[in-house]
Length: 165
Image (cartoon, rainbow, N blue to C red; front, side):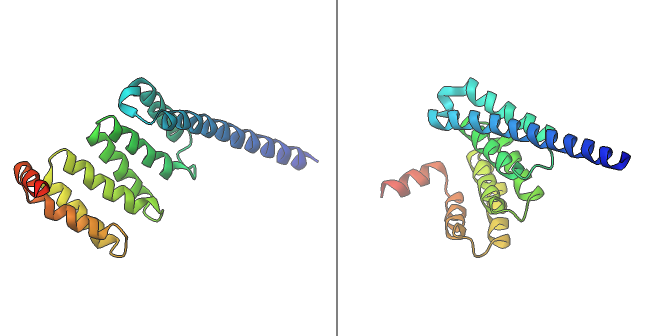
């Protein structure tokens, strides 16, 4: 009988943890939906920061949640929208290193390269695009990565000339 009561307590505690995680995830997704509805992160900086804080709190509270790759990836996107490219690159790095088997891993590596490119870290961008092509040779973005590498060799003035022709 005593074991039965211990089992019931265990089940109750487990259920309350699952409910707390679901509530936290629902809160994060609700904030995220409102931000996506606003469409322009740059004009909603305070709200975007609130969403980032909610992402961070969820990741800290539930480090093993199955939604973490998506939350980290979305965090990278929001940071990129805010012009926080180094932090964005870090978030994308965490996605493809901590969760290499998820479908977001290749996109995270590609986005990380793009962040480096935006920061004018051309050699790092090139190396990251090459890593992307090596790790995911059949990904649909491989041709785009090759094109991005070719463009990295041009100065800003040369790029302008190329696009005007």
